Image 1 (cartoon, rainbow, N blue to C red):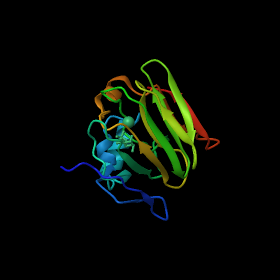
Image 2 (cartoon, rainbow, N blue to C red):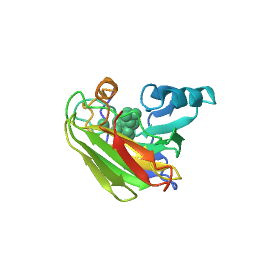
Image 3 (cartoon, helix red, strand yellow):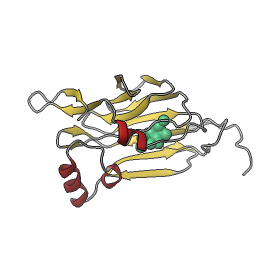
Image 4 (cartoon, rainbow, N blue to C red):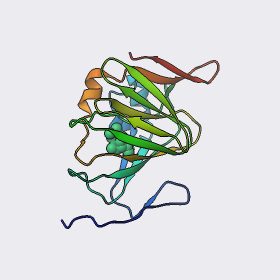
Length: 187
Ligand code: M6P
Ligand code: ZN
């Protein structure tokens, strides 16, 4: 493939699209097996229409060494047995940093290095920094779609097995009484 030439990205009016655009990834509830605390509630949601939980629209920059790919992720609002809808979460097999920029809605960036968990509140205009070696998951804690731009090294990669094995340290739940965000120990 020819080298990527310099180009500018234009956000769509609703911040949901990139122009020019590369791959679009759609993750449904069935793609999130083993991630929600309540496996029965997850299975019911899969059986009951298997909703789209999030989409990832990438720019044309490929995930190869030395390139700097970008993508916009849109997480739909939703709850599975009180747990806010979220991304799968991953580690970078080649530990490298990444930045997220909040574009719309209200979310959180959950970070876990295997011992410590951190939560960054994400709203439009906020940049969340993911240091090398920290697994990362995004969560929609609002009532509208949560959108963010990600920029990451093309050689970083995605290790999803790490999260299945180690968890993410915390879970983001909606408190039954107040409706507020409740961060609870992973279980
Ligand atoms: C962001 C970036 C992508 C990632 C996506 C969805 O856009 O971090 O690299 O793929 O979020 O997250 P996940 O891969 O954990 O499903
Ligand atoms: Zn990443």
